[in-house]
Amino acid sequence: MDMLDIYLDAVAAQLPRDTADDIIAELRDTLLSQIEEREEALGRPLTDDEREAVLRAMGHPLVVAARYRKGPQMLIGPELFPYWIFAVKAGLLIMAVIFVLTLMLRLSGNPAAAPEAFAQSIGGLFGAGLSVIGAVTLAGAICEHLGLRPGYLDSWRVKDLELLKYGDPARWAAHLGVDLRGKSQPRNQERDHAGTGTGAEASGATRARGMSWASWASSAPPRVKRARSWPGSDALFSLIGGLVVAAWWAGLLHIPGLGQFDVDGGAVTAAPSPIWTTLHLPILVYILAQVAVDAVGVVQPAAIRLRAALQIPVAVAGIALTWAILNAGALFVLGQGGGQAIIGGDTALFSLEALQGMHAIGRSLQGTAAGISVILTWMLGVTLIVLGLTVATNLWRLFGPGRAVHG
Image (cartoon, rainbow, N blue to C red; front, side):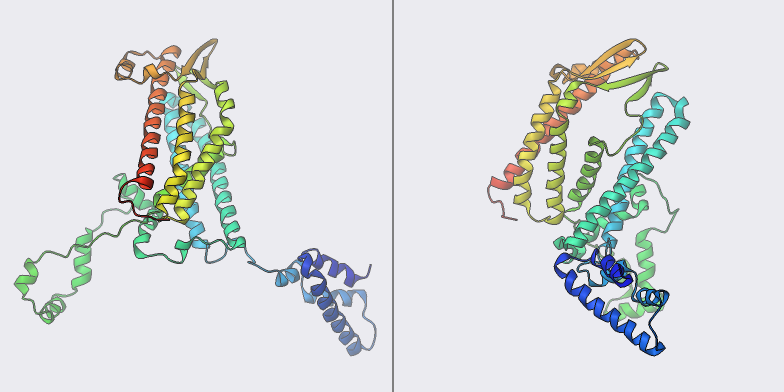
């Protein structure tokens, strides 16, 4: 096969079929013209090396084909990149919180295993972080190449910017009472110094407004109305958390140490009961359905009635799944040495007497299983109440008197 044909075949393999023939014909004419011009200049036919130099001057087949390819030429374009980096930071922060909490639980049961626990947590966090970055990148690439753009990217308003402050880790630390920036001047003093300037400038500005120094000094500083937060912020964080949980439930993320802990110095393993195998797919579908509802909340935060209509069946499905788990009996089997103990849900444990009796439960294997059963039952009971309130709230949004129609 001629060298020119090999080159053109390589280019054609990267082009859409509906336009490949026309493009290749155009390239062939261009390259043949360049070869003929070179031969006329030299007064002889070109050698193979000289013909290859002409082809190399045209460019690599991948680069040449990209010139004719429609659509974006990058994975994440410059317009979506700032949103991509913010989503990555938020996802990594959520994963870090999950792994820190898991590490604290492990260390509370067995402080002597700290080196191993730290090593496993760091390794697991690294893998989970890569998965988060990959998921966000995949979502961004899909939006970039399919031309999908949520409306708020173009129609944003100043009050929508409240969420962006959480991209600063110091903001999160401030909510926990930790100052990452050191002591600084109170904000009201900073604003006064920045706004007043020198005394002469302030006095001149005051006189220009027809105010006396005494009245200005005694007047209270104006109160700034705080902008309302973006209505889709809760949905965004719920969406990111749902994607992380879905990836973990599907086995794509591994959190070390969840199935092992220590009781009285002995290692205890927790094995799931068959109910989790039976409900694995329904629970995954439920998580993905909630993710879809959150995605609607991110893309269309003002579509209140649409989100309510979608949330109701998802919440009802959650109630059914939670009720099935609560009444399944055995949920986990604890094993230590040759002994076993059952962790299970029981509606009888959803009582104040059961909570008050936890202080008398020992640290044995059976006592640990009994205590976890009470806690798990209460968690499932509270989940049922929350889901029930979710259904009631969204029914009110749909059919309540005087409800405005949105979405």
